[in-house]
Length: 207
Length: 197
Image: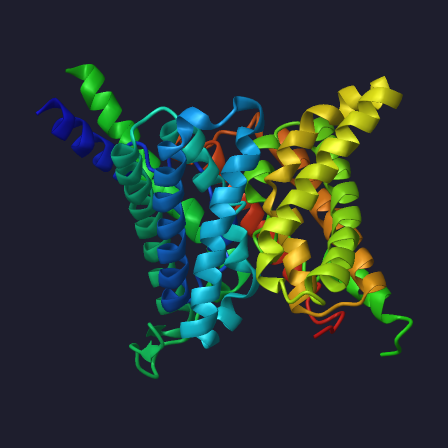
């Protein structure tokens, strides 16, 4: 019973109060760049989720045998292995997407969120729990970026997933698909999320 | 454009029109967390510039002279990250041994650099764009200087912001991202000045 509760708690935390993007501000480097199209973002997010969940699981399995002095090196190796799997499968099955994403797939290795979850969680917890944590962090990370990509693509080009949604009356906000748009969208998202949490905390302290 | 001038064009493009931070979003983590003080950001920026220039050139050599002949291109991620980590470690030891002052100025930033996306990013860009050795070196150097300019400008603005009234929800990372957005808009003013494919 306690174990099931722990699993549920581990799963839910990264979706809200421990969200990697708007609470911990981790790992926006490699993925913010591809949020100008919903489809690209989806592929990147799936790649990050795959890497995050499986490297957490793998490192948690071998955590007792890793000497602490070289643990960074071991972590990087495991993460890089999974990223290579993502890279070569994309290249084989989805070459157009692979070309568009360019170097950003490889940059999942240096995405702080992967290393961060491994260091903070997987090295102290059991494999199943680490897998759940990795998966949940991936989802918590992914939905924020998908929301950002949704607005950037809709406002910037009037389309979603490559299909034209808004009619000819719509004037494209081309700033949204350019680099500043990404910064502004993320800032707005963080602002809204923080305002919400601040209010909630105040109410809790009042009671 | 003539062959001779191409590396120079890439160098300036990497600083202004194609800034690694403001147009490619690379190196955001340390950019947001370290940019509170002007002096520390300058230290980190210089360390990043140095490591970027050298590792980009080093990775070019390893990729074209070892990985390509043996058809091991798919191993490039692992090889690049190991070279970067090893180089950073080496620099740390050399600085510690020969220059105590520099070690205390730069030393604390060096471990941070290994996981800076900008370093690996520059190496991957150079492979995809198929740059020559000289061009790669200038590309790495330019990217580093571009990053240095961005983080120092950011630190300067944030020091001023200490006295400003910011909405509580936007304080911290939120306001930093808004500033980064404005800086990216300013840098868009450079676009079109240098054309490189």
